[in-house]
Amino acid sequence: MSQDLYDLLGVSRDADADAIKKAYRRLARQYHPDVNPEPASKEKFAEVSRAYEVLSDPQKRAAYDRGGDPFGGMGAGFGGQGAGFSFTDIMDAFFGGGAAAPGQGRGPRSRVRRGQDALIRIEVALAEAAFGITREIKVDTAVVCTTCGGEGAAPGSHPVPCETCRGAGEVAHVQRSFLGEVRTLRPCAACRGFGTIIPDPCRECSGDGRVRSRRTLTVKIPAGVDTGTRVQLSEQGEVGPGGGPAGDLYVEINVAAHDTFTRQGDDLHCTVTVPMTAAALGTTLTLPTLEADLESGAGSGVETSFELEVKAGTQSGAEQVLRGRGVPGLRGGRGDLVVHTVVETPNRLDPRQEELLHELAAMRGEEQPTGQVRPASKSMFGRLRDAFNTH
Image (cartoon, rainbow, N blue to C red):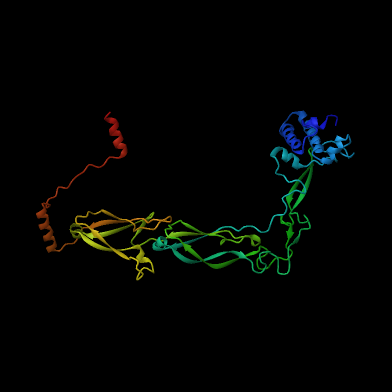
């Protein structure tokens, strides 16, 4: 090494470890043969790597500063027997870290992991969704094995350290290349990276630490839910491997169709049919409320019906909006009830009824009605076209 190592890296002799490492990363990215195809780049990269190997090691750097041989006579030169250059340094140069150096790996992975979330769907009546309900549900999920307590080992036994990786959970693989010794860490195949082996697995859970079980839970469904709403039950889902913490359970709501009311958001809609005479003269109808469907409705002071006034001359298709008789909202308030009226025309008349209707028609001058023909409303594009044609 005729050239000064500090000059090779472009750092001062009092540069700290971070400055040396930063300089090496910059030069390695510049001269690495996979990046720079120039013939001289390979030799330059080897020189830079030798300099970094010495200056990044406190003992070798001290020996070099004293004028001694930093390789201790074991042979200098990148890729030689004495060059303990690792794949970690190259990975650091290109990616800023990420590869674990020997003895500095991630360590064994835990057998205990969080469980998955679970989903169950239930159907509720419209009134139950509107006013809330408490429901018992049965779920089939993984629970902690009571035989081994989640450890996975048979009673009286315990996991033992893996002899292959000595409990590290990973083993080093060394390969030689023109870069020197490339060392990588891989999960131990014997223990699958856990660092321990279960010599005598629990027979109940086969070493998983959990078993499937059916249990009953109580879920409180808040007022105002709709189809698709999900109620979250924390830590009531699947228990994780090794008896790990349970995930969450989500209860998805499906609201059944109602015989009288149709829901649109927080509003309710219903249709009433009245005879032609009642629509002409006016009448009063008794309609049920949604609260009437509740088991606690009768005899509890809850309004189960109300009077609806149909005004004289009501036309088919007329709507009445009754404020605050809809579905309670999840965030407060309550929707409306929209009543749609359909006027029913009789299609079977006895002779006397027909005679009376003829008399009524004569009195109103409606024996030969001409009807009112209105032009069909134009579409938006038709109106735009007419507007442009007038200019």
